[in-house]
Amino acid sequence: MTRGHPRRALVFGASGQIGAALLAKLAAAGWDVDAVSRTPPSADGPGLRWHAGGFPDVAAPVGRFDAVLSCGPLDAFSVWYAGSTLQAARVVAFGSTSLETKRAAGDPGERALAATLAAAEARVFAAAQARAATATLLRPTLVYGAARDASLSRIAALARRTGVFVLPRDARGLRQPVHVDDLAAAAIAAVDAPAAAGQAYALPGGDTLPYDTMVQRVLAALPGRPRLLRVPSPLFRLALAAAHAGGRLHGLPAGAVARMREDLVFDPGPAGRDLGYAPRGFRPTREMLVAG
Image 1 (cartoon, rainbow, N blue to C red):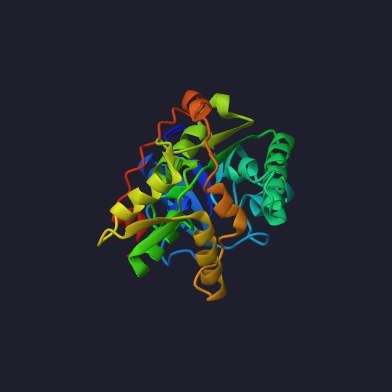
Image 2 (image 1 turned 90 degrees about the vertical axis):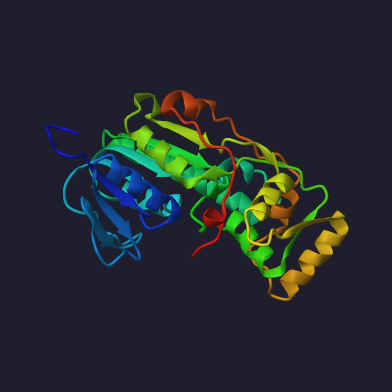
């Protein structure tokens, strides 16, 4: 609080999975919030005002903010922020560890994504510096917890549909799934952490697990406990090709399959030191993975 008045935050991507968790924590901490979404709820709440809009055309609410937090696509936010006149002492924006994991990917599209993320981070830092603000970038690993992610919730949906989930036997690359509530807590901590100014942090989850063990925990949380079936890699590639050909699977490029064998591990130490970041272990429940 400042002089008896709540601090004011502007949140982009507020109806997304991280944004929704962030709004709940800001409300609990007594912030006054302007929330922006392409599809906002129909009603405001105590200390919460919704604004419809999306990049690049969204107009910021009038006034100065204590903090601006972006939970949506980093590239779109960075371009908008750099071209805006928005005034806020602190900017906290979510990017992705894909900046690191896809930098040298075999797929040109994945390399382009990494380059886009790197350019977006640089743009946010430069724009903040130009207006005497400070920025912090947060890079989550595999996000889960709101049953709205495109990774673990997709695995859950496929397994529920068929009663089985198929993986290549060598899918043992290490992963660190991270809960949306831990990401929201890190974002709020970054607002008040002097050491976080001008920094970017990886935000992994509290457990480091082989890919197949991670999937097994997902399946164990589902009704009926779908079965994990491990098959030789050549057979898996044939099954994957057939699923793509039949239109039953989209958005899983060859690079994603190859990375099942790779360790994608990040150090939580810097975020723990500067933000007090202490993410939970991976113990998913049905509600975290299945909507409704």
